[in-house]
Picture 1 (tube, rainbow, N blue to C red):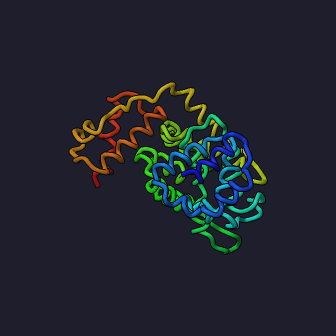
Picture 2: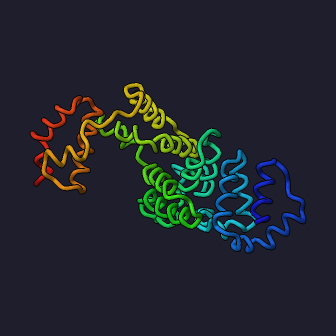
Picture 3: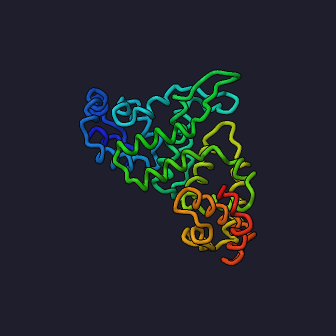
Length: 287
């Protein structure tokens, strides 16, 4: 435990290593895998929230401790990216730059989402017309879930971070959505962390371009101006089942999602209008 704590103390307190301490950490790095995952998680949580977090992760990698606590992150060192989009360097360098760009008041889960958002790139690397990492967002989410389970994070925290990571590559899609669907995303309680990841990802890239981020943020703030708080759905699942004769299941959820989007775009404004829409248009859900 003292191996990981030494790295944390050095970076949170802005100290330096005594040469003997540094040599001992590197010599005994493999002992880090003797520590319980819960205690490793607690130390990493403190490291990732520190202002010097990118330097601390560099230290974990340099001292060869990282392969024993986060081998998936170690794999990002040296993993290439297309130079026309990522002149800052390899995947590791991008992740460290993105972490450094994250506002200090960002929460713990936003920090983990940033460090995980491209962790699937080494596994999806291929060379076609250029270096590609197709579907890396989905693979990154799967790897993030595996790591967080290993570190004994709560189910809520795992679901939150993996959702943010999985959807971090969809900024343009958000702008192209119909207004009701767009607001459905914006009012999701996880969206603020997705927006933070959008920012850190763009700010941690060279050449940097924040124009798309600002467009999404403007649309998000416009939605918040229309909805000071998340509105109550016009109909419940029970209402839908009673009106359609459906039993609880995916079809009811699909109808509720469609009703919710029409409510958010103000196409439907009362429960009666929602029931009338269900009667006139909901039949296609019944096949």
